Amino acid sequence: MKRSSQFQVITPDPVTHRTELLDMTSKVFSRGMGYFGAHTWSKNAYIYNSNYDWNSSCIGIMDGRIVTHFGIWGYDMRIGRARVKTAGVGLVATHADYRKRGLMGKTIRRCLELVLENNYDVSLLFGIAHYYDRFGYVSAWVPSDYRVEGHLIGAGKPTHRIYKFAPRHRGDLATLYNRENATRTGTAVRPTYLKNQWPEKWSGYLWKDGRGKVIGYVIVARQDGDLQCVECVGDDAEVLAVLATLRKRWALRDLRFKNLHYDSPLRKRITRRMCWERRRYIYTGGPMIRLVNLKSMLTKMTGELAHRLKQSHLAGWKGTLLLADARDKVALNIHRSRVTIAEPSRSKHAIRGGERLAQLLIGGEQPEEIIEAGKMRLTGDAPRLVDVLFPNQHPSLDTWDHY
Image (cartoon, rainbow, N blue to C red; front, side, top):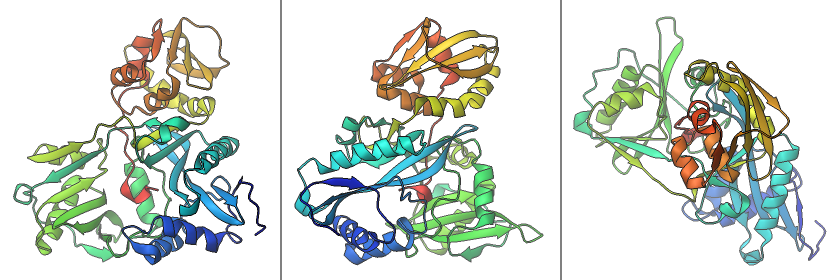
């Protein structure tokens, strides 16, 4: 690699930059898992064998070496029935000798240009507080965890035989997952990761119907004396029975759920019992979102928006609703629940939301909360329309798909 003191941001090459990219990022993320642990993790499952986007990720080159990395994991995210192209952000790393120079900021800005050029609609990350705000990222949703005390689970025995399996991408399991999560906002359309990121921690158990077809599964981990449910698919009563059986088999205390979607029948089942829910309200850090292409995103959402209107008291509403974020404006022409995209023009019905518009579009919280927190300006019939078009969707991304 040619040595130069001038900083340059480029996309990484999977052959040329492979060794050095893994080395630099493994050094930065060695805390907790060690250098070799981080290296193996990235090589086996996180960067390779995944949806890592080599054409949109960015590395910064200086003095003939890689000094920054801003990774993009591309996938389709559900917003109800809609699918939007999402640039997930991970492995944000700066070489220890090149920090405090503003190099990461330059890397991020170039990467945001690339994700726009590569037709992404929105970007999502799980990050530290007080950093990504400057690049237009805002709070995406409120993460929730659940805990059921062991003596309160009260589930019967599973009705099917349980088979252990090594979690990885499988077509049959992906089909089950995609079918069950078809309209759950925030979830990823599988496949994402092709291999188990944490094979030493995550194990899988599945069950089949009378014809030998898989009809449900769980991915679990033992954590601090409790059973952690990483992911579950299938009949909620059977899932709970399987989890209860595993907890007893391993003599663990409580049952924990992380990133269990609000719309999951299992969440509804456990909250009818005595369970603990922990919600973390933060305005910076954690799950954060940024609009990349407002027009493209709304174009993909028109069918979902039409469906919401049709089911509401505003099904017969006619007019033009203008939406504006920090960079773009888009008009929605609405005629009796039919929604189409139009060029922005003057309208008395408008939502001027700035960066916070991204959170409103995915339904990250109650709309009135988002509007107040973002100091949005709504005019005309926008206050009436916003509750129908952009209700709280309780988004969540399953742990398997995190980047």
